[in-house]
Image (cartoon, rainbow, N blue to C red; front, side, top):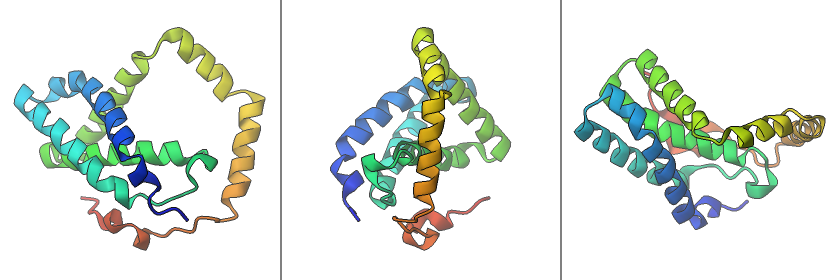
Length: 155
């Protein structure tokens, strides 16, 4: 198990996340005034930086779901901050939905077309089936106890 996998990539992960979260600014400004948006972005980046060393190693590049884990942690960093400013789960869900919608709309339509073709191809579906079978081997056992933020309140 490689416990430093994400820490070794921290600079790259933060750089990519900053680019992504800055694109979210336009959506956040529909809900909050400018100063609060800047606060949200800064706190979210700080949260993400704190979460990186806590991410469970699930195989790195050998596991197709590593990118999903990274994306989930990025959203978690934002949700924690939005919880402080928004309160309601419904509002947070709406904001996250709009951010993701904005992100998808920013992708070149031609690239998106081909990405859909590849994602839903027979070859890709077979790869996902194989990954599912491999996942059941539980090569990287993990329980919530391994992650300090597993007990973050659901309120």
